[in-house]
Image 1 (tube, helix red, strand yellow):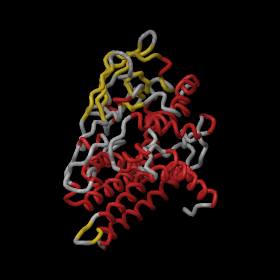
Image 2 (tube, rainbow, N blue to C red; image 1 turned 180 degrees about the vertical axis):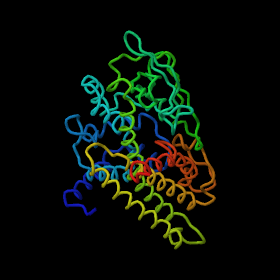
Image 3 (cartoon, rainbow, N blue to C red; image 1 turned 135 degrees about the vertical axis):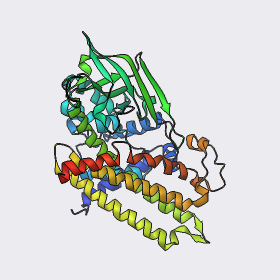
Image 4 (cartoon, rainbow, N blue to C red; image 1 turned 45 degrees about the horizontal axis):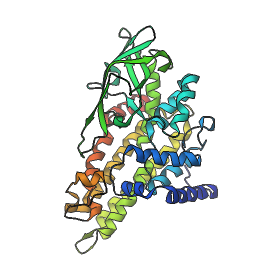
Length: 396
């Protein structure tokens, strides 16, 4: 595949780069580039800046308020935004439930929810995994019982990213216990601001609380909040997971972390000279760059090969993207050496001064390394993705 960009695409790259440089709030950029934690208002501010420009939904068709861009333009946009220090666009609405509603949702659900996703009027989270039902999602136990005017939902979801901010959850729940596991699941849209919903944070290895348990106790869901057909949620879940896994590849994030890695290596001394001068480190950086270019080519191939969605090839993207993100975090920590070992939670949460023994740009190295351990687990573990590849692509 020829990755040479045309003059129009180069002009678009410059337009995006200039826009990010001029419009991204400096405090948000500083947090991102220093690997400090963002809060909900940081994401929302940036979403609304992009929406005002008409770029609020880069992957959506024009009819739903999107840009209508093709795969290459979307890739350019993602890379330039990440390089410029912009936060990721929240995937739960734009990249997950949004495409599902466009394909399978009723007109009333589309009209009700899609416009609000463009400016994050509603914050969404994903209610898939449960204790004992992560990789084997079809074994989920959360139950939705029919009543005269809707469903009553009881159960527990876990590893629910950013649920502490969420207004709504797209949730998989069992509506038929007699059918085979995949057949008896429905997808429901649940208002998390009602009684019966409890969100409990889970502190992760890096000290953050971005994932949560969500308890649902007699939570009411009206019939109109059912996505598609009852008991057919497994179809919609697989479609959504293809979009999620393509996004987890994180091409733009990888390019930004690669640039940060090179900057760290240039600013860090080893044996009296910049670390970047070490031939062994140069070799490691070059290997990651080659891997990243190969991933970029594969992403474009997958994105342009089918109008039906990413398909099982998304599993390849998910595995390689996870591995490259972990390699970059590990190499950043390696460059920092002993200066990267201390961890200052207070510095991660705010603009407080760093009190570690090394330079402040080393403060988040260990936290970043620990945080990236999760990439080979969330969105379906690497082992599960290899099983999908073996069955759906290789045919064994």
